[in-house]
Length: 144
Image (cartoon, one colour):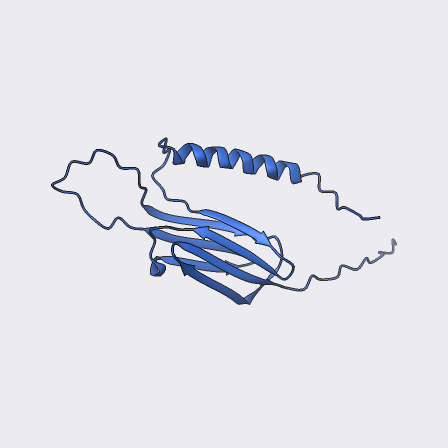
């Protein structure tokens, strides 16, 4: 018989993700509520590692900063406008520029000294090695 961990609040995470995706899609189809750039990020967990993948097109490697503190991974950077239109008539402008900062609490404890980050063709990949899970022992406390 296989035991399955009961997580009653997991369904709320799914609902939150769906609502967030709706608003992300809403702002990406021309209904920009704010003029900020926010890259899409995936977080996956494997047996010994956590893999974070972000789509950051148009951003230079030197404009990206990744930090890890208290098991919170932060990716920040800036997508800069590279040209100035002075003598041209602009008929449509959909590209978004600006700075961004995304922070995520990782689903497991990771080794902050063993992180591998690569940025290639607009895709950022961060691989974090998981620490061994601490064995939780039960301690009976005597009443006085």
